[in-house]
Image (cartoon, rainbow, N blue to C red; front, side, top):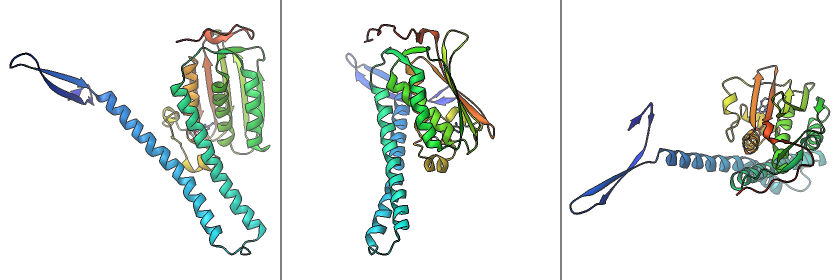
Length: 276
Ligand code: ADP
């Protein structure tokens, strides 16, 4: 059946209705069907994402098992073990991100307590700097007193994901600027700007899809799970905020989480009552 330009799926049921009469019930199940397809795609993607590091890992294990004890130099042995540890870390990161996504989807959305975003940014910065290994210049502009009401663990993962992405997708020698400031409308903005590889305009709308990556190889090699921006978008939505992405290929990107004025609160505001 056509409806506008999109095909729709209807289910038809005939039910007895009085003597010699039937009632025809039609239900539009397009949305249900779409959700089911999304779920199937997701399960297929997760299985694929886990199988890749597992295959590499078990390949190395078998190779080492088949080798006589003295066949490898100490350096070669270490090299294989490092590669195996990297695959194990990739799997751990994937499982951790999957658990974060599932808890974002299943836990009730509470208004939360006043969160010092500056404190969260500092922790995330330390991790980003460790990942960078001194290869990027970091600059910060953080408003210590600016607080928002929210969930600190959720906010920490969104804040961290944008920062580690800036490191991953900015070649050595690039600059990363992080800011946490009030916006003219009375809201607040967390911004991460980088001078990295940038993103083509056509790819920008797809970035927050689960497992979408512009360059699968680069994402994997740097430990990316393909879920970071899906998590960041989800966290933003749960805080009535918007994840804004701007980018110019070859010049760099600006990722912002823009919080509405209603979320800004004094540092010592009382906890909001839990919502049903
Ligand atoms: P990943 O774990 O692959 O980084 P994300 O969901 O965090 O997954 O990001 C999705 C994709 O968006 C990345 O694979 C990358 O192609 C692109 N991307 C994210 N952040 C940046 C950035 N700062 N600069 C360029 N590309 C980016």
